Amino acid sequence: MEFSPSNLLLYAVTDRAWVGKKALLDQIEEVLRGGVTLLQLREKNLPEEEFLKEAVQVKELCRRYNVPLIINDNVDVAEKSGADGVHVGIEDAPVGEIRRRMGPDFIIGATAKTVEQAVFAERSGADYLGVGAVYPSPTKKNAIRITKEQLLEICSAVSIPAVAIGGITAENLPPLAGSGIAGAAVVSAVFGAENPETAARQLKEILKTIVK
Image (cartoon, rainbow, N blue to C red; front, side):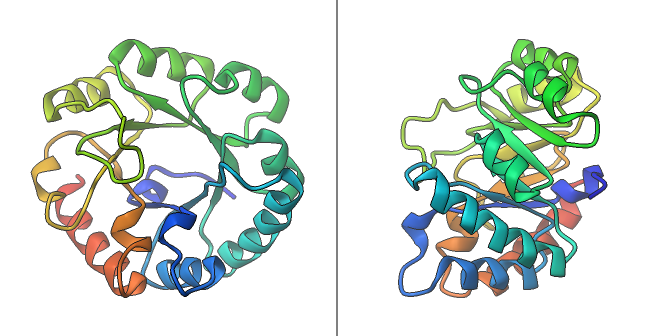
């Protein structure tokens, strides 16, 4: 699927900690109905065979809504499932290595917490950056925080688009206006909501007002 910066407007990242009484696939369909523009499937503890089976199911669901599917960390699962790309952290597989293996049309996202990391990721072939944590995160309690000024500095240092991530909610999203982001990546703000579809729709409307 062709990638555009507009795909990053509302970027949802799955987390089984927020599933509750619903099935993960049901939650995913709810946020897709709510207007999520890109979905990252994140499974840190699932055996690879189960991860792959799930990725295939989620890919089919994303295709129905014309939303790209990104796999967290695992390039093998991304390749075998036919996902659109992968997102890697600073300590995961190098972006350049993934680009050489997967070719020019595979979407690669990279985490960046400094200007140096951002510039290196872009030079290595990343398509977009995930930058944060901009707020305290219930998902990653030990995540290093960055200021809005640092976020703007990172976004200004590269030509590829960036999403803010880390503890983002509908309430604390507006202050990120003017930071240069192409969108926001959220976990609990949609998957932890009582109504994920409504939460996604609300976040998307806010993002439309702050992303230029």
